[in-house]
Length: 478
Image 1 (cartoon, rainbow, N blue to C red):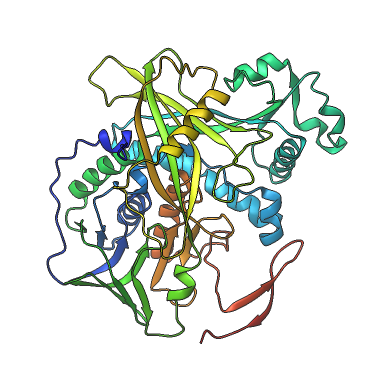
Image 2 (image 1 turned 30 degrees about the horizontal axis):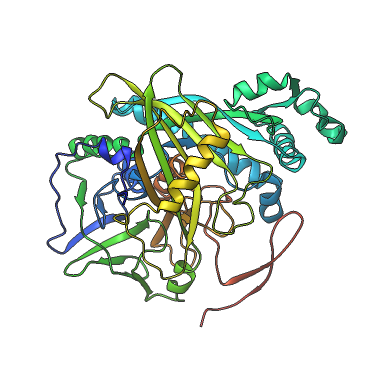
């Protein structure tokens, strides 16, 4: 049986002792969750406000989803701009994408301010496509980007692929044609079924190591305003009109604001003593998915790289619990005592976590997912030499998916003592960083424009619209 063995956690080499909550406390802000969302939210709150912060984590910092992801930096959302525009309208969607992409500069700001040593690699990432429907979707999104004054992506279509004749005229100036072999070389595959690709800004980083180092910086710089408590699971949150209480099994923390930086479906209750109920709306609005990943080492002979493969007939496409694409990242791996190696990470298989089902990081890696990942490497990645590869790592992690695939960042509409920075939606690092900045602005009293990230008020009923939601009624929760 294969254990859940993450390369990111292996690199941590943690020496900081665990400090559990051992008394009742009072503070300005409690941040629940010690992954990248919680760590970056704490960082920007401490940097941009004068508030005192308590960070509380059920396990150990960065050992949850942040230590069990693909290490992939991308502002890509797993929903098209066209679909989002049906919910929010074009202007709000383009503004939301722009805000999300601002996290690239926020990441550089963190590195410049703190002199972190955790490596991060910025690169040109690719998506490989195999059907007309996929290509049209990418071209349509690119058209909206140009109309919204956002940087357009580069899109390439294989010459002589016979697909170009079926592309509507309005998209003809949004792509270039190149020889098929050149296209396959860009996305590093031998599968001639891929007939188009797009390129965009991406990167790689060990988000667990990043969090541990950033936390060390904050503990040193903000020693009078930051407290950290690990292995202190929260079981209840009480909300009053102007404050809240976070309770563990034995102790509690009173605070003016509480920020949930969790997967979104933890096993605790939220009791709103100042109005309508929050608990059911909160717990049932974020769905869990378990993602499965594998990694192996090879000598450094290629630069950092990231690609998503979208095949024509994925055997997982009709499976609601599976993934329709396979992604790969490649970067130097410093977690080996041998000479420098590249770590090749691949992922794609997923299963939905049923409501109220439990998940444990200590569960073994399923044999069927091991087989699926091996097949995905063989079918897509031309550098994969099965006879020469020994997988050093198999790991799984838990993701939280919001219903509309957009991260939830902001005040809980029913009681603004509570805020959210949650909803991984499959690609969580860059959105977590933007969310941390936005939460700090809200805590600082800044008046921000309405955005696609604002939590929805469940007391308001919406109907579908071609441009934006329309409020037709208001109800009070029973």
